[in-house]
Image (cartoon, rainbow, N blue to C red; front, side):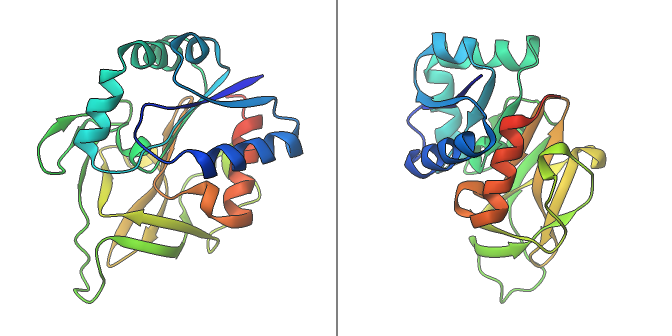
Length: 212
């Protein structure tokens, strides 16, 4: 089994690489590699798309790496390979992003990515630090994870899903803020599982064993 963490020059991949490799050893999850090689992406059994920075820049970088982009879309849309988007990698799954300018996303989970606007004006944006997950939908990747468990967030924009059953978990930050989305073989996490200690590592291990 091969898991490819996609390197499209939009994020620091070191901590993600180490966390996924650690859990692959623990759960017998096969090989994990960071790659910018389209052929490796095409043959991988699972795909991980990280992302740090602004939605338009990440979308442009991803589409600018045409070979990687095409291989990823083929693997996820046509071959049904398990996919995990992290942080902006999750946001890119949306229909449209509204950070700085309107930008077309992958359209895998219908919805829009817009600025966080907490009802409590004392809450700062970006939403940064630990927050309690509220699990709304059961999911195999959340086995052993419960409402009240903490995850680590760093973001200024949030995913508003069009279909409520595609929001798997949220947190409260002056209102509901989407934390996990998913459908079919696709999953997205707004937080950083690789920085979320034992809870995040548990989810990474579950993803590496997930067979949707």
